[in-house]
Structures are given as structure tokens and as C-alpha cells.
Length: 282
Ligand SMILES: NC(=O)C1=CN([C@@H]2O[C@H](COP(=O)(O)OP(=O)(O)OC[C@H]3O[C@@H](n4cnc5c(N)ncnc54)[C@H](OP(=O)(O)O)[C@@H]3O)[C@@H](O)[C@H]2O)C=CC1
Ligand SMILES: O=C(O)[C@@H]1CCC=N1
Image 1: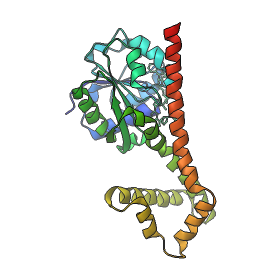
Image 2 (image 1 turned 45 degrees about the vertical axis):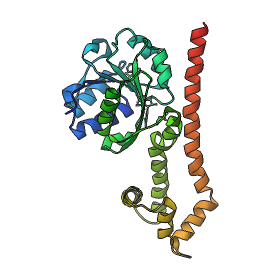
Image 3 (image 1 turned 30 degrees about the vertical axis):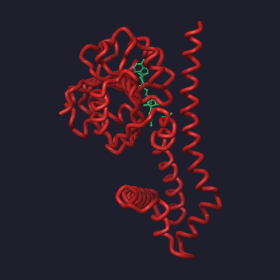
């Protein structure tokens, strides 16, 4: 059993997806999971009722009992939050942020010297224990806490320890990635309906097809291109489908989606660095 107490600061969609995965995995007792937010009490009530975790208004949070603080607010709120945490945390407590575009150095520079921080990038498939989550520890973070973070995040899916320089591209692929597949499904459902299926059936067929392809990618040694070729009979239906996809720029569109999200993650990091410099020179 995981013996640390964790507190979510933020109770939005990402926090809920993680809480759901953590509770479902059942390796952390629910009384070791505390959830708080800025002001939305209805949201806390919903989370407490649905998942059985502890919730508390921020003003009543007992900071001393928390080992790992999971920052799950919007990136724009980070500086206010770090400022409010700075003098409340001790050296053995850890900040684990899931915020897009907020670097470990940004957190370290806005906290007391030697603060242990970890930057993570989960995705909403945490809800069903299938996130692809990256972590990059800060410079003062002990290996024991990296191991603990990995153990915690394994409850919500697979964990990749990466160099922080790779966080933007990871975000482009995995953090934002579920949205590309949902967007793909919206179009598959629409085409399915136009072909005479009802939307629910089209969704079930499409989802099973994505799931099957994902499992093939995880379990077979073939490259993605080889797997694609095995579906594609000469002059057959798949060739016709792929030709249409290429004709409409499908491959390029997918690559541009990943690159566009990664670029935005990088831009958000730069904006937070610029804001930091501005504060230092003021
Ligand atoms: N959604 C996703 O797929 C992913 C999101 N992320 C990251 O997760 C973070 C949250 O995103 P998301 O869940 O979509 O956002 P939401 O807007 O759904 O939730 C934000 C939450 O933060 C709370 N909050 C705001 N300020 C504070 C504060 N000072 N102290 C404590 N809680 C606060 C809000 O509380 P209140 O309602 O009371 O104001 C709300 O519960 C973002 O930084 C995003 O980059 C990362 C990976 C994937
Ligand atoms: O869209 C966003 O900024 C967040 C981060 C990754 C997924 N959602």
C-alpha cells in the first residue's frame, strides 16, 4: 500500500480523471487522498460523494499532513498558488505539477531554496487507468520521491520518466493526444451515420477498432508502417481509404496537430519564464 498522503490543489477535469484512476486502482487508501479547490464547494461535494476521498476548502487544508501536493489548477493561476505555498511547505514535502508549460525551474525559483518539485504530464485517460504520463523531477528532488511519484502515477496508467526538454513533444503526443482521437471519432461517427449506422453503433465499432489497433501496437513487434501494410490489400478497400486520407492531407494534418500542441506548450513555458524575469528585474 502507498503510505503517503496526497492533496490535489484543483478539482477540475484533470484532477477528477486522476482521482478516479487512483480510487479504481485501490492501492492508496481513500483517506490518504485530499481534494481542495479555490471556491467551488459543489464540485468538492460531487467528488467526495462519487469517489469517497476527503475534500476540504483550501482555507482548512492541514498542510502538515500532506506528503505530495498535486498542483492541478490552470497554468495562469500558478504564481498565486506558489506564493501562497512558499512559506507553508517544509523541505520533505513535494510539489507535483500537472500544469502544461510550467517548468520545474519556474516552480523552484518561486519556492524556498531546495524545494522538491516534479513536473508531470498525464492525460484524461487516467479516468480509466490508461494515461500515458510523463514525469521530470526538479534538481532538488530525492530519488525516493521520484519512486513514490512513479508508484502513485502508475495507478492511472503507464509512466515515462523523461528529460524535461522532451516535455513539450510529450504533451503534443500524449497530454493533448486523446482529443485527436475523439476528433477522429467524431468524423468516423458522422461518416458511419451517413453510411446508414446509428451513432451509438458507429461509436462502438470505431472505439473497438481504435482499441484493437492500440493493442496491436503495444503487443506486436511490427513497425506501425508494417502493421498498416498488413491491412492494405493491393487495390483493395484500405488502399482506397488511405489514398483518400493522403489526398486530403491526413498524415500531414496529424503531424501538424502534434507539433502545434508541442509548440504551444513551449510558448507557455517561455511566457512563464518571461513573467519571472520581469518580476526579478522589478
Ligand atoms: N484537461 C486535460 O486533458 C489536461 C490538463 N492538464 C493540466 O491540468 C490543469 C487543470 O486543467 P483542467 O482540470 O482541465 O482545469 P479546470 O478548469 O477543469 O480545473 C481547474 C481547477 O483549479 C482550481 N483552482 C484554481 N485556482 C486554485 C487555487 N489557487 N488553489 C486551488 N485550486 C485552484 C479550480 O477551482 P475553482 O473551480 O474553485 O476555481 C478548479 O478546480 C491545467 O494546468 C492543464 O494544463 C494536464 C494534462 C491534461
Ligand atoms: O489543453 C491543454 O492545455 C491541456 C494540457 C494537455 C491537455 N490539456
